[in-house]
Length: 255
Image: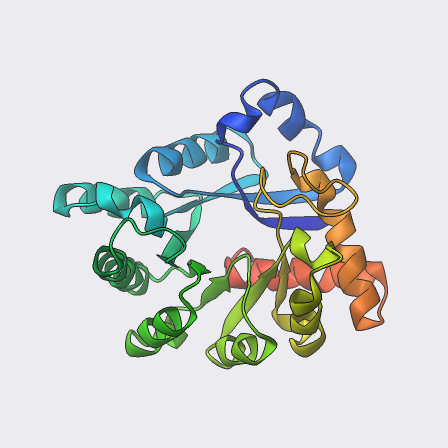
């Protein structure tokens, strides 16, 4: 049984075969999926997918690249979405400095507000952070994110920083990059972080692992990621799948 912690099946990349693909998951060993919102619209779509499929849960949040859509009225709407029955986390939220827009100040403000929201409603967060390691960590410290808990998704920084996030009580999301030939940094992260703090994810439709790199990603590729983690850790595939499954149930409070 594999638990997919982070996918985007609301994405237009799945418009032609969404139902067929999702319906094939359980017969292929994918037991549960969390579909993660990145805007108010995609959050609404994620919630609809969770209502349609018993094995899908949703996360509600606004990605840093979409934070310009937020204002007080929309933030109230987001809070209502976060309180939906099958919403298990606030996310994905965070900072992304890869592009110039939205401004860093805008991203920081709404990151902090969404952290406060998660703390208020007692749900974990899913953190997106790209090219913004220090500011992400500093804001999480200042907001006492250890009280909130959650996942640093699609982790892309050093093993040393990963261990700091683990000390804060967070889990590290490991995806397809760990299988890449040039994925040395991610292999070091997997070596350093205890298996009890690692989660499996695809970020579908993005970042397909080897041998499907460059193609549309889906949760059906999770076995490649689990196998690579098992190789790095020197453990069995089954142990990797079982421990990460239990980790996911814990953080999403599905026990």
